[in-house]
Picture 1: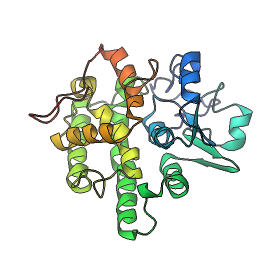
Picture 2 (picture 1 turned 135 degrees about the vertical axis):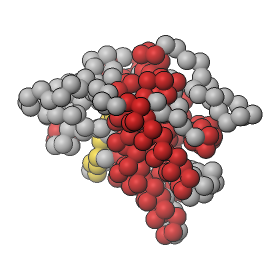
Picture 3 (picture 1 turned 180 degrees about the vertical axis):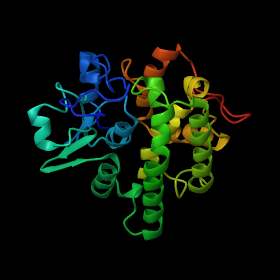
Length: 275
């Protein structure tokens, strides 16, 4: 996740600072201590739980217990510090350090982590499934991410709303349905087991199920996405980080602006609600 502009740039359009000072996990000592114990390996993942882009790699590191999360927020106290800029001159999160390897951008990080630590998430010997995983990740980044910016980011306070929120909500809903109809024809992307594509997309789809996003950004998630999120939450051991992180999880941040919600949107008729 990049800052909308460099610190020295002149103010741009009406955009709220992407991460207020109260946002980052690193501002909460108890959250920082908890995050350090998420894994026992050597990978260091720099990011924050309030970023969908960060959450994919952070969930993987936590689930596979291959490292630790280093709470890092954009700005002078985080990504603009000299030691961080020495790793990533583009001052963006997520950023990963694994020994001498430094890498940024969530999709690139997920591919690296899978190749080295979790090959079942990106199977080396299955070129067809890997290509499908890549296709899903690239399609999501190139199409639905801008819908996320138009519908989820305004609810989180990361940027101002678009001029026509109902139109933006319909576009996001239509694109999400189209994505689900093609890439979620099986339980997960390309099969019945998780892949790195699922780690990539699930944090975004999770947020689209929050009542605030439906009410204020006019997003209607299809039943297929609701069931998918439920299945991801059950299959990913670290998925509670999407709901609870000392007040800085995605759901907690949306709840803080909307009012506490004990559940996300109603799941598929006859199924258990996502709580």
